[in-house]
Picture 1 (tube, rainbow, N blue to C red):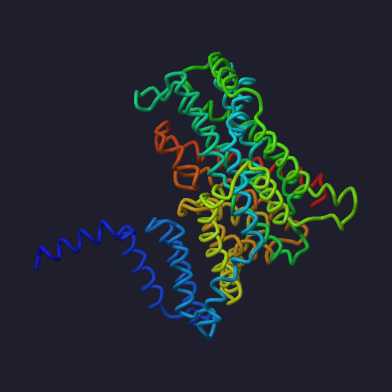
Picture 2: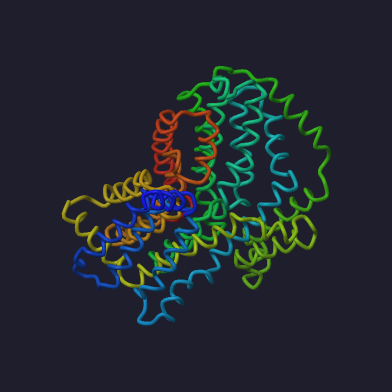
Length: 501
C-alpha cells in the first residue's frame, strides 16, 4: 500500500503541470476568502468574484502554472460558479466576453507582426547599426542599445520579445566579444552594465508608445472610463505626451547606471569592428527586410492618423484595423507565412491570459466591486485630511511600488489601476486630473524597473547571469524613483505646454 501511494504521489508530481506548494497556498486563499463574511456594500456573488480574482492574481504571482493555464482556470471557475449571471449560458458568455475586445486583438496581431523582425533579421541589423555608430565606448554601446529599443518600441507590443528576444541577444554577443562572461566570472567587464541598460531601456520605451507593451491598451480603456470619455489616449496623444519625459529618461538612464554599476572596460573600440563585421556578413537589405521596413512605415503613418489629418476624419482607421492590414501585407508578400502565425505561441498565449484578466476586471466593475473599493479608499484618504497634491502622490507611489508583489504588469494593472484612477477622480480637482492620469499611465510601465520578476523581459535578462539580484533590486529602485521624478517635473511641465491642463 505504501509503495502504491508513493508511486501515485511521484507520478502526480511528475505529471501534473503545477507546483504543489503554491497550488495549496492559492487554494487556501480562495477558501479563506469565500468563508469570510460578505463585506457591507457587496452582494455574495460580487464577493465570490473578488475571491476568484484575488486567487487568480495570487496564483499568477506564485507561478502555480503558466499564466495562460491560470487564466483558463479563472474562465472555468467564473463559468461554473455563475457569479456574474443567473444561468450557465449567461456566465460563459460573460467569461468569454472580452475575447471580442478590439484592444486585445491589437496586441495579438501586433505580436504576430513583430515575428517578422526576428525572421527577416531586421531587428538584429537595426541593433548592429547603432552599435557601429556609437560603440567606441561602453557607455556608447549602452546608448546604442537604448536607441535600438526606442526604434523598435512602436512596432513590438511584446516588450519581452523586444528587450529579451531582439535586443538581449545583441547585448550578449557584444559582451562575449569582450570576454565578459558570467561563466568565467568576468561579467563585470562590460556585461553587467550592458545587461542593466538593456533591461532599463525596456520599461522606458514601454511607457512611450501605446503599442510598446501588451497592457497599454487596457490603461487607455481605464483612463477613458474614469474621464467619462473626455480624455482619450490615442496612439498619437500617448506618443506626444510621453515623448519628452521618455527621451529624458533614456538620456540619463545609461549615465546613472554607469555611476551605479560602472563597467571595468570604459573604452570598447572593438565593438564597432564587431558590429561592422556582422553587418558585412549580413550583406545588403534583403527583399523581406525591405518589406518589413515598408510595412513599419505604413503602420506608423496609419497609427499616427496622418491620413485623417490630411484628408479628414473619414480616413481615420481604428488601430486594430491597421494592425490587421499590416499582418495581411506581411502574409501576402511571403515575409511571414501562415505557419509563422500559427506557431507564434506568445500571441495566442497573450490572447488567453490577457482576455481572461480583462474579463474579470470588467466584471468587477459591472458588479460594483471597483466602486465599493474606491469608496473605501476614498474614505480612508479623506479622513487623513491630506490636500490633493499629497493624495495624488500617494496614489501614484502606492500603485507603482506595489509592483513588488506582482510578476505581471497586466495582472497588476487589471487588479488596481481602475480603482486608483477612480479614487483620484473623486478627490483631485478636475483641472489636475489629466496630469494625474498621465502620471499613472507612465507609472504602469515604470514599475517594471523594480524586480527581476516584474515583467517577461526581466527573467530573461536576469537569467543570463550578468547581474546579481542585489544589484538588480538596488539599481531598479533608484531608476524607478528617478524616472518618476522626471515624469513628475519635466512631464507635467511638458503636458502644461501642450495644453492638457
